Image (cartoon, rainbow, N blue to C red; front, side):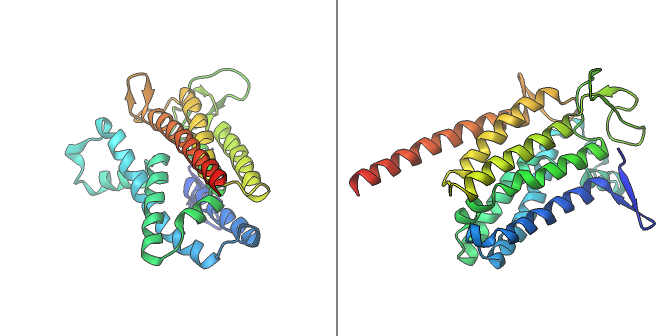
Length: 259
């Protein structure tokens, strides 16, 4: 685990490097499957540009909200402290919904069917996200509970995790489950032409995130009652996705009966 990776004499942030790698590989897969997915790469890049802005703003905004009790607000105008806040701390759900909002906005502005593109490429979201979790492991953020069983990891002094203590490798477990989710939705998209890929993603990731949060030990996640912020969002996302799927299926059945 290293916060920075030495590359050609330069120190590169491991977290950012792995996120960038995941994004590039996801785009490569989209390009390779473009005919099967029936998507226009130019439109995809356009929507992705908007998405990145929304994801960055949304993930940082939700982090500031959940971590508000831990932030030294009297130091907020100190350049060094403000820079530290801006460089670290991103919440995935904030990025997800912020990114989706910007994709819909881009679709409206540029007359592109945003929903169609989301349905076709959403399986690449957990794929890229998996690399982000590997970045978390390298940096030591989003670390797991104290654990002394098989696979326990000990982070060094310069990481964001509690150093010198055996912890559960929750980042690696989530990276693995995200790849499985990506594979499931990818099969549903490419081989079965499923029209419910968005709902499937929200259900699978919502359940995955809800359960894995019990294995998290990092502070500043926001705990409200028995659950963390992400667990509450996961519950809402799963319930809403199931309701939407049921409503859509009923409408489709009625349309077929009348048709």
